[in-house]
Length: 244
Image 1 (spheres, rainbow, N blue to C red):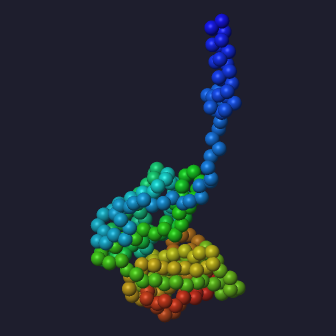
Image 2: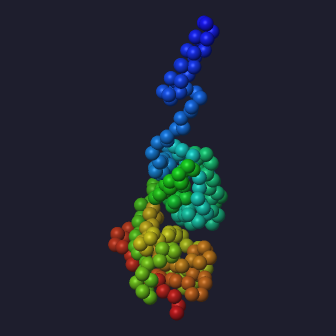
Image 3: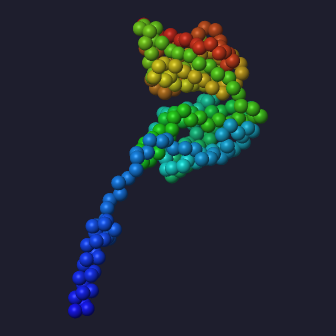
């Protein structure tokens, strides 16, 4: 009788636990929380952003969650343009930049990551992030802004780029790599930041082959005949056209 009573008690207790949701025989799946909509956050970088007298060849940027890189070769831009692009790798919670070019003295460099950094789980993108450093004692602060229109219809084309050269020889834009280059946004606007003081010659290009040169027939090109300075605050307007 004692054994029978014990069995009845155990069965009754098991039923109560199952009904109350605490029994191990009926696991309740997690309901989850709200969807993560936040981009990865930078927790630290080595060297620190905006470092002066930079002498190394490696930069590490750490995040608060696991990240991945989306097409870094096309989406990351460098200023001034290097002869050899850095090697950029994303692993776990860290982005590593290995500099392969010889850095110039007393020069401000910026790395614009575009929308290349995003978290692994929800693909939330980190936008408008630039890492800046200088090999000299100061960060250059020159800025140039403007918009590019297509001369034939007044519309904009976000696939164009804008480049800056230090000289204005007839063959410069066709044969030489520019000092600086940047992309247009959806509205056709461009912005150069952290420019060194001085005069520049500005061009808008279609750049079909990615060489940042006007080297193919039928490509769009726009330019100003006079040089511009990095201290100019007024917006620049360029009209791109084809030879036709």
